[in-house]
Length: 91
Image (cartoon, rainbow, N blue to C red; front, top):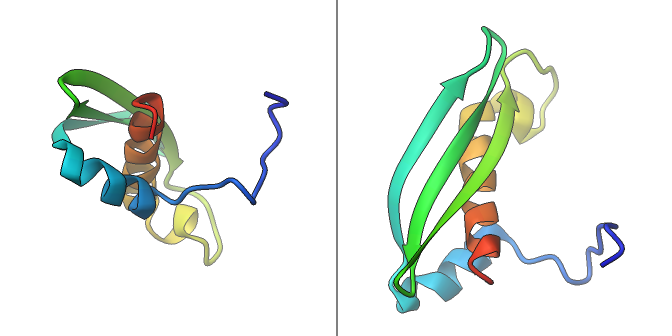
């Protein structure tokens, strides 16, 4: 693995969820932790194929602009954390 982002192999979180649901995906918990007034992290806990996985993503509340990280930072972080948990599960 080179560590470089390859857009030709990228799988969206929606596609990962679509693959996981028939396999019994269960989102068991989501935790939001604020480190200070402007940023924190979100952890999403899932069960899939009888195993548990955790995905973590950070967020900032002081970003500017029109991207999801600025307009909907908590929701964007939740989506990222879920996608990372599914990636840890091999999806």
